[in-house]
Length: 258
Image (cartoon, rainbow, N blue to C red; front, side):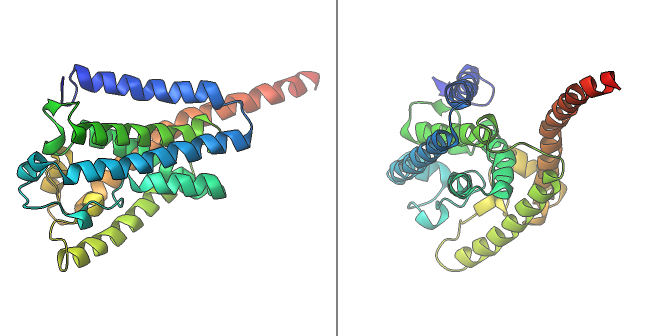
């Protein structure tokens, strides 16, 4: 059962992710706030544990080293600072301390980033059996990140609003700038391949396309930020329409009396 973008195994994975989101929403949407918080805390905790187990397994995977053309596993380049996996910690923090701005960032960025990673993976994670440990770790971790990000909304912690979209885009740009600095420091000291937030062009088709349009490290990610903005608007519009209809339904009886 090899996995690659848009084959049967890929679509089965997407169905499982969507199913997980629906099941969690059905089971816990109407539970108390404390119960819903516990669900999210447990989900994030499981993700974090699985992430480190996955990275340990990856460090022992000789084929992974060959595919990536490296002699030994570089832990400095595998820290949980990527666009996807940093959300494991951000979601956990935001839920515990009720930080709506961070929830907004995680809701828009985590599912989109994880979906892009699953759809346009690095060469080591495509065209091979889904049951390889590195593939199980990669796809399960990213699938759970998608589930956790969407669950912020389906469990009632966060509702998308239009004013949130530019804030999320600015936060992403700011974090990418910080990570570019981190990459430069790491590359000049302990890790020549460090590439958090992919501020240097990686071997990923969609990002290589962006880099071909603007071949400047970090700056080429402006296209990704634009994609995020469009995606966030598309996600937000249905919520705006629903709120308008809800408000109209609430005011219509009063208008009828007048």
